[in-house]
Image 1: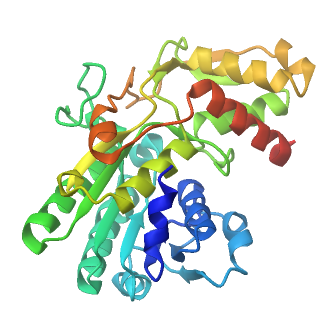
Image 2: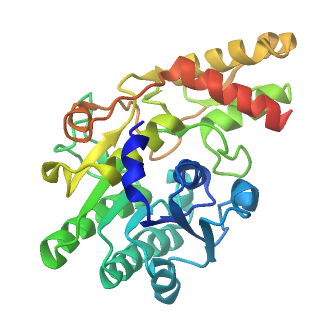
Length: 332
């Protein structure tokens, strides 16, 4: 991770929206460990207070409790800020299908509010969470940034609109942006609870509770699962890169390998069995595929390697081992 360049950020202030969330809290932790002033904006709709509890006594940490759908809150959070890592969003394809209006309000209107507030505050760089869902029905693998298909869900539409708005704010207001298309991020602090929990923490919790995890479909669908430390590295690189050619682009954030859901569940069962031998006997069950799910996802990370010096350290196996160790400590 290019944390060495963060040393030059002394005296700079970084805003992390959604800073109490899974990815946001990991970003806050890395920035604070490098003595960077961090502002966290969160309304705690999906973020957890426990995620930022260790930071509250840190003199470099400032919490703004607010909502990106409120422009005034965005202006307040952006005051005196030099850089923005925009992570706040309502994730989940199923949630967007069930409630497209709220998803759009947060992910589009909220995103636009943050762009406007960042522009008005003279923010130097706006790095934002984009999504691999933007590739939509484009079937070719691996996914390359310049070629996308039609979106398959309201969520995917909102994340593509983010990219369009970021591009317009660069061309119209000369604001530097970088979009990061996340591919199935997992790791510590990812919430296993709730109707829209990500597959890895959900499976882990089920195994620990001696319940059968349920795979949508026959388990052949595959994803480019990406450990959180790789994602943090990419954000820090996007924040600190001095290469002008790298700015005002979107990048895949992934490891560059795909794992089927059945392989994933089997790996989790193997690693968790090291803590509890009875887990190896738990059956893996199946049900119908979900509407809006993309069958396969695999990223090309060549562009990120070339322009952002991205060098992911964790593959699916090493990342899952780290995640399982954390979950066993926090969920059992």
